[in-house]
Length: 248
Image 1: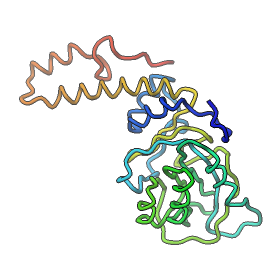
Image 2: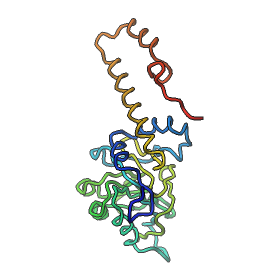
Image 3: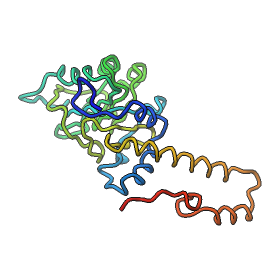
Image 4: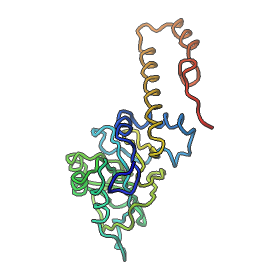
């Protein structure tokens, strides 16, 4: 369905709430069973993206994208309010996704605690920054999850150049309205049109993993127990006959 004020399609509330129960790795596993193996750039973030505030746990929201500079002056830019208004006008949890397009990138802070408090007030639950950030303690107090590719103490003149456009953050291509599942592992991207199927498969993956953890934390695990387990399971540690098919 469409959020009444926003321009992107959203998942049913029950589907979105279901995705919030899983971490980014479980969701990525589920994506494999829904659409097959996908190129990493359409699937999950690269190792350069850091979870800056692990205490915030898993954060799930819809991407609102922008490109920004914060090192050198630019001749033309957009009103900052235009980006913030686009967030305020939605009625769903938002993750601000901002790509540093300066030259060089990743040198000046694109995000700090003032922006964190503003974004929290207008509906953001997190920020994924393809660049540097600062003011970590203040951002944590604002209650906003934060992922970035670096931390620095300062910045130059900052400007928004574009918003509502595709961006690339730590090797991951993100479109406006993508569902992002963000945690200590990084960010997994979920296209809205398959979100319901991903939620169903994520529950199956989580149940399978819970069974494995139970099996392998038994006291006095014996060779006989190991052989019995192997006989009853197949590739990927699924019980025989239970593994979903991976689409080609």
